[in-house]
Length: 112
Ligand code: FES
Image (tube, rainbow, N blue to C red):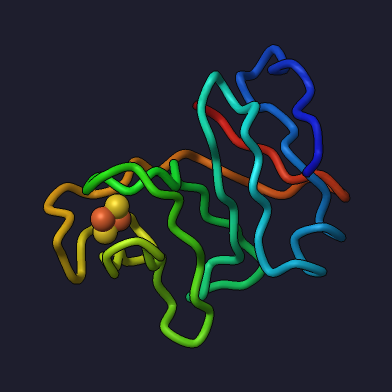
């Protein structure tokens, strides 16, 4: 996992590189604004990125991105969340929070 650098003046924080994102299909960083953040390519526009807090709203496991389903899936009890964080399948009944994210050069940036 990549260390996160301190937030910039515009509030964005570097959480990883584009190379990491494309190698692993996702970036998981536990040092973003005191939280965890998970970043993936936006399935609707792969030049963009999406960021969520991956902590499942059911019982706190970390969700992972399932590319073939275009959704975040929780390994613990199977909750499924859309790319925008909304619940597709329970048992979770609340969305996972999303963050503003973007790519700049080789860096992936997220804003709390
Ligand atoms: Fe995610 Fe239960 S903790 S479905």
